[in-house]
Image (cartoon, rainbow, N blue to C red):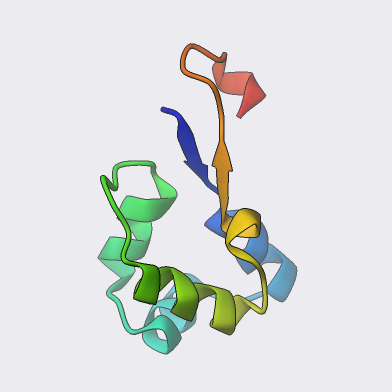
Length: 75
């Protein structure tokens, strides 16, 4: 996968449970899981904006590009 989603890192920094995060962002915990597990095909900018607002971070704190073929440990 070329885009790595780092929601777990920011949630851990803020000590925020996934349920609270999902509620504050306005999406379901299941959709948070889809993002966290790398199964999402897209994300709306409005959702990314809400996530950054709730976590007080930048989009680059949540998303990272990794070259295709990079070993799993590199993620």
